[in-house]
Image (cartoon, rainbow, N blue to C red):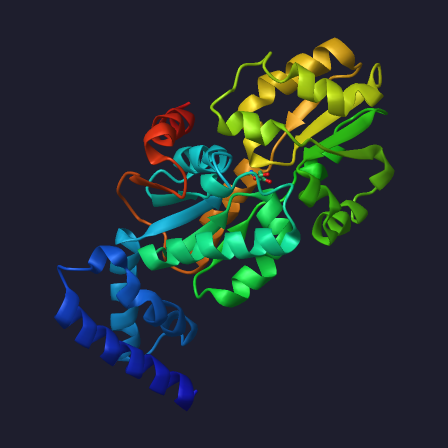
Amino acid sequence: MVEQQRKADNHAGIAIVKIEAEIGVSLGSGLIFKNARFDGDAAGSGSAAQVFLRRINRFGAFLQETGTADSGLGGASVLREALHLLPRENYLYYGDNANAPYGDRTYADIAVLTEKSVSAMADFGIKAAVIACNTATATCIDALRGAFPFPIVSIEPAIKPACETEGSGRVLMLSTAATASLPRYKHLLSTMKDPSRVVSVPCPGLVERIERGCFAADAFDDILEKHLSFLEGETIDAIVMGCTHYVFIKKAFARYASLHFKGKAELFDGNAATVRQLGRVLKANNIENPCGSAHVEYRTSGDKARLDPIFRSLIAR
Ligand code: DGL
């Protein structure tokens, strides 16, 4: 307790000195509050220093963004949901488009690239992060949580609600090759009541086409035929978008299902659940914005001039 008190007072002292030096210059970066926020909150209430910390934390949080990262454009489907459900927050989006797709890369590559993306967002001064990429989550979410001081929210393929659909048909889980083969997904699958109902199908090729700005319902028939024709005529109760890119081409999946499957093939994604979890995490850390309207900052490792209009139109849909 004495040690916690000392830490909190020490952080308060550092924060005051830095505020005096930097106020009006780098408040927007939020970096000056990074350590103070979490240690101070953990120390609980009590001293004047702790009360002061909580006040500046709220002010800092008000200015700071929540970072949202993906290999490319897919995470914009999560951000779009966040803009609906948490419209008072500010967001930084980081798309690693220069290195997309992640799904066919080695696990080591995916982990290194994701760490770089989150570091880029940390340098910007975010208050929390969302890994809006099933592939990155399945590969390295635990390592990321150990490496960064802010809370990190992740996404999972929505097989749980999909498996709750009525019917005797199958549940399709479509994702990148990496997601479907990683232990994290296999463990999630093993927790379902009847894992054998779920057919996990990697769909390489879809992300590349989406990254080129292609979203038309009939523009993916060839790739879907290649990956899903072995299920021709089967009863499919649910299809899980196990990749955030796929959420933008739901019409392509619905079209394919109506032509080739029996059953209602209801479409599921994990976006809303992820954003609701972000809301809980911001609240639990006392860093949610009490008022204001969303500002979105877009960063990419790719060709920003080409991608920016696509990104803006995707989050506005
Ligand atoms: N959007 C990503 C996902 O949710 C990854 C796509 C990729 O880069 O392969 O898995």
